[in-house]
Image 1 (cartoon, rainbow over the protein chains, first blue to last red):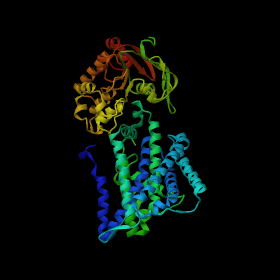
Image 2: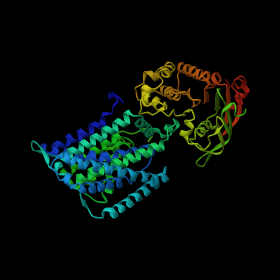
Image 3: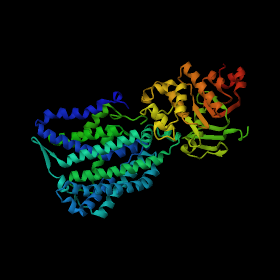
Image 4: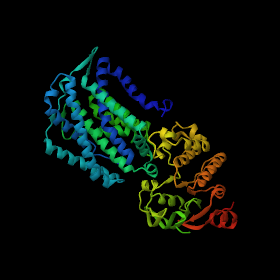
Length: 327
Length: 243
C-alpha cells in the first residue's frame, strides 16, 4: 500500500488519545510517565496479540487458549533467569542482556513446541466449529495452567528485573522507567520484523492473501494448513515472548496470568480488526494508554475503560479499525 | 469421446452442499487442446461443477479424472499443482494486495516480482493494459472489469495445461472482451485446454470448440459449439433464448 492510500484516521487515534488526556492529567511530567507506561504495556500486548489475530484471520480459529503460552513463557523465563543470578544481579546492562536474551529465546522455543502440539491435538479436530473451538481451547488453557502448577507450583513466583534494567531515567521532572523503554523497543523490533515478513516475503504475501481469501490461496496451489501451522507456532512463540515481557513488567508470575491477559488480547484484536496486525498494534497501544490514563484519573472505571473503548471503536468501525476483506 | 483425448472427464458426479443435492450425475468431457463452453441457465449447476472439479466442494459420488488420473478425492492445492488454473465467479482477487502481488502469488516459481517471466508479463500487459497501469495499486480499488482482467491475467501468468474460468467476460467493456478473446485464442494455439462457464452466447459461440449445456444439475447436451450455434431451435430449447 502506498503512502497516499494509507488510512490515517485509526493511526491518529493514538496521539489524539494522548493529547486529549494531557490537560486532564495536568502535570506534563506525570503525563509523560503515564504515556511511556501505556506505550510499553501496549507493545507487550501487541507482541502477544499479533499471532492470535493472524491465527483467526487465516483459519477462522477462535483460540481462547492463547493465554497458556503467555504463562508458559513467563514461567520458563523465571526459571532461566533464576538460574542466571550472576548475570541478572550485575549492574552491567550487557551482562543482564546475556541472561534475558537466552531466557526469551528458550521461552519462545518452549511455547512454540507446546503450540505445535496444541494445534495438532486441540485445534485441528475442531476446524470450522466455533463453539467447539471456544470450549476446547479454554479447556486446553485450564489443563495448561494446571500443568504449570504441577511443574512450578501454584504460588506466585517473583520475576525481578535484572539490576541494569531497574530504575528510571529523569527527563526534567518526569521519571521514565528503563524497562518500559526496553519493552517499547522490543515491541517495535517485533512489529518491524512482522511488517517486513508480511510485506516483503512470499510467505508474508501468502499469509496476507490467506487472511483475505484462504480458498483462493488453495486454488493457486498452496497448502494453507501448513501455513496456518507455521503461523500458529510463531504466534505461540510470540505469546511466550510477550509472557516474558509481561512477567518482567509485573515483576512476578502466576499460573493464571494468561487468563488475565486473554481478555485484553481479545479486546485488542477486535479493535484492530480480526486478522490485521497493523490494527492489532493500534488496538494494543490504545488499550495500554487507556488503562494507564484511567488508572490514574478515575481508578474506579479503569477495569471498564477498555471495554468502553472497544464499544466506541466498534460504533465507529463495526469490523475494527482495519477490517480485513472477507471476514 | 474417450479419456485419451479428454484432458478432463467427469463421470456421474453428484455434489451435495449441506442438505442440498446440487449436481445429479454430471457427465462431462473436456477435449485436450480445445476450448469447451459450459452453458446453462442460472442455477443449472455450472459453478458447482467447476468448484467440484477444483476440490473446493467434494463430489459425493462419481469421479473426476484429469489427464487420466483420478483427482476426485484430492485436495484443492494438489489439483492446482497439476497445472490447473482456476478463476472463480467472484474473481478471487486479494483486495488488499497490489495487482503485482496478486500475480506474484500465482507465479509459484517466483519468490519476487523480478523473477516473474518478463516476456509473458509483457504479453499480458499487451492483452490487458489495466494490469500494467495499476500494477502497484491495491486490486480492491479497481473497477469490476479491471478486477476481471487481473483475475484472468493471474490465471495465465505462468503456463498451465488447463484453465477453468467462471464467466470471464462478466462486466467487461466490448473492447476488453476482444482482448480476452485474443488471449484465449493465443492460449488455445499454444495447446492449452480451457473450460469456460459463460453467459454471453456471442462470446461463447465465437470462441468455443465444444459445448456442454447444463440444466438441473445435469449435462443435458454435449457436442460441437458450431452445431449449437447453427441450430436456433436447439438454443431455444436448451437455453431459453436464441442468438
